[in-house]
Amino acid sequence: MTSPALVQPVHHAHAGATPMTKPIFTRGVFVLLGLMAVGAAFAAYRFVNGIGSMTNLNNQYPWGLWIAVDVASGVALAAGGFTTAALAHIFHRHHYEAITRPALLTAMLGYTFVVLGLLVDLGRYYNVWHPIVPFMWSGHSVLFEVGMCVMIYLTVLYLEFVPIVIERFKGRVSLPGGLAALNGLFERILSLLDNTVNKIMFVFVILGVVLSCLHQSSLGGLMVIAPYKEHPLWWTPILPFLFLLSAISVGFPMVIVESMIASKVFGRKPEMKILAPLGKIVSALLFLYLAFKLGDMSLRGTARYLTDGSVQSIMFMAEMGFGVILPFLLFSSARARRSPPLLFTAALLVVLGVMFNRITVFITAYHPVYKVHQYFPSIGEIAVTVGLIAGLMFVYRVLVTIFPILPAEEEG
Image (cartoon, rainbow, N blue to C red):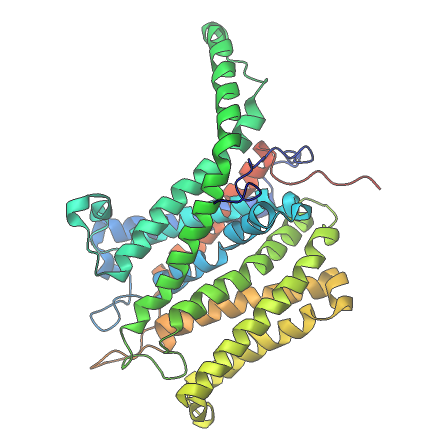
């Protein structure tokens, strides 16, 4: 029998959330627009002339920067959406309600730009709709499961954003001219949606957590099938579990980084009363990840590769040292958690560590058979990736200016 406490309605209306009053266009925003324009130009060139015209991808390296950063890293860094939703709405830690909306927006935009990056990376991008059609399904493909979960979860994220849109416009519909006669109709529709969505939102919250766990782990499953192409320090049969655990571990640090950057950009004080307690949770997750990582190495006897002097061994120790152990020590310190610079540094190290992990698994530690030369991304690949990141930041600024997403700053 399902517990009533688990399925109680999820109320997304935060009285303290408010649109930002800062102007959208600043000098920094114009820089973002310039980077977006450069990335869009390279992407247009790719679509017109083919993927081989502006990338260094080939038959030995069919994936590169776009998969490692835009997709694998992007999906992992968007994990703050489902981790904060689980913390606040499933585990009922309502103290963290104020960060669920920014985390939801970051996840929604993250997955949206993951899909955009994937469209650029797919050779036959016009066939991206195929997994939607049942007679084209392939139940034996891990990538099929990833694709289906990402599509459904992205839909769930947009549905979870609906209450924010309703809150912004309910009671404020004012259409111009002859359209004013429709004001009452739209208000009734918004009221109906508001009443309905709040009653069923718990379904989408739970569905989002389940779907995230599925495809976060399946991204690691993509490389399990290549044991002889992946360096022993990085290949393991529990790679799907490690991918899931690292995604959960980076969820809260990504929320901390996003929140503190937003506070700096909009001239606000960082919400240390909410962010600092997250550090305790992150330290436990990092310890768990490190324990499984070292335990797996011990059982499989791969620790001997740490002293072979290879690039992979150096990268492994760098990731563990700066991406796991150092932030674990910082998050374990009450003094560091109370210090905004140290808290931000610890969170940023985890974010960079997970990105480092995904790039290594999909590029550096990957050795294709009959390799002719080592892959390195082209200028166009880098420009498209930078343009996508700039686009995400620009849209984030626009949306937090229009919708009540960030909590109002406390007086005093």
